[in-house]
Image (cartoon, rainbow, N blue to C red; front, side, top):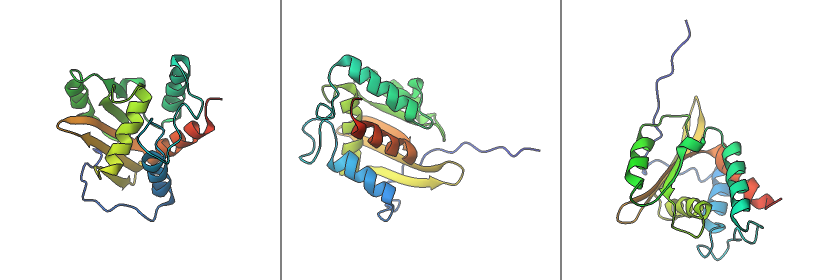
Length: 174
């Protein structure tokens, strides 16, 4: 008889230990916090423009590449939202269990939707509103939350997805 896995929610406990010794965590913090490609959020950052991403067709291609490289993120769980639609998207996110990844975020925080996503991850890291936890069945997952008066983003991504995205951005528009 096959054993059934119980649904597991990604931890949202910000008091969990931070894995400072992990080379992957260090790479994630370095890129998403210190070298964030969203314009004007980090003095150390190289912008999407500098990586060669210019115009809607290139951002559409980048979005497709990011979604294709993600472990368990689908178009349905990628939810850039306007402020009025954000609460419904956040409710949907709360129903998700691992290994599903999701990105619910305010879409107009930056000039581009992808810029808004990366800025949301950056802000969660900068403000300590994230957690990292290893789940034996699924690997290491990151929970990011961005709150400024109201919840602007709630994101769950696997470590593998976050590392893959770094490589895609750093390759530039090829």
